[in-house]
Amino acid sequence: MALKPEPTAPFHSVQYALRVLETVARHACGVSDVQIARETGLPTGHLAHMLAMLRREGYVAQVADGAYVVGESLVLLGSGGGREEALRDKLQRTLVELRDSVGAAVYISRYIDGEVKILHYADGPRAPKVNEWAEFRRTAHASAVGKCLLAQLDHDGRMDHLSRHKTARLTSRTITNEKVLFHKLDSQPPTVPMLDLQEYAVGTVCAAVPITAGSTVGCLALSLPLEHAHRLRQAADALNRRAAPVLLSLTL
Image (cartoon, rainbow, N blue to C red; front, side):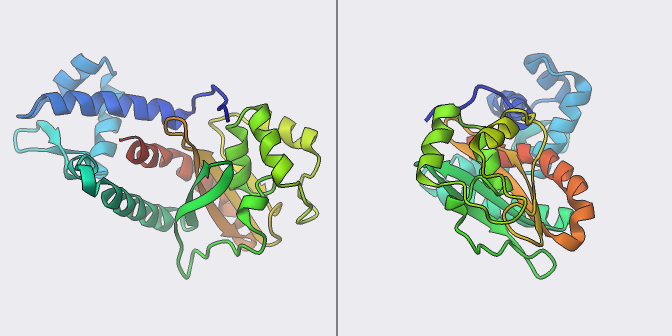
């Protein structure tokens, strides 16, 4: 399976974040934002937003004199045998916070061994998750999650997937023509959330944004009942803004 070579906005943010973290880690006794800017070459305004995000996520901490040091989350994610558990806990906390901030059920999905897999999710009474009435792994052509993952594959990767999982009609809005589907995937800007407007299930709308870490295709998604469809664009934009911290956790 080959990935399309299109970097996403979260990818660029993560590259900047890694440069900042590498700089902070080199200075065991702490480093000022001025020195970080000098060593990374990042503009002051951009760096301020980046440091605020890294502090919020626990990757850096600020000590009494204002200097930045390595944060607890970064220590835990680099702790060898405990990394997997620390990563699960970190991702779940992030999803719960994201669920509450956007008012929707949220999901992390990855394309593993040729299949769509939902790895983590956070839902609640006021943010119900999607009813999986048809298996997600068989309906990638219809769901926001599936389309977002397929959009990150090359033509052969998509054809391989659809040779195993045919494009069945799930609702009157489902795209079943492969050429039409591929055109939609190729014309979708990687920085714009992929939408599902009742293509997978009547009464549900969804959005997904790519979070590709290394060679593994992934996405961050949300779902809303149809009566909240008027909030979808705003929620999707918020999801896009919060994709970088999730991708960073998967990358570290």
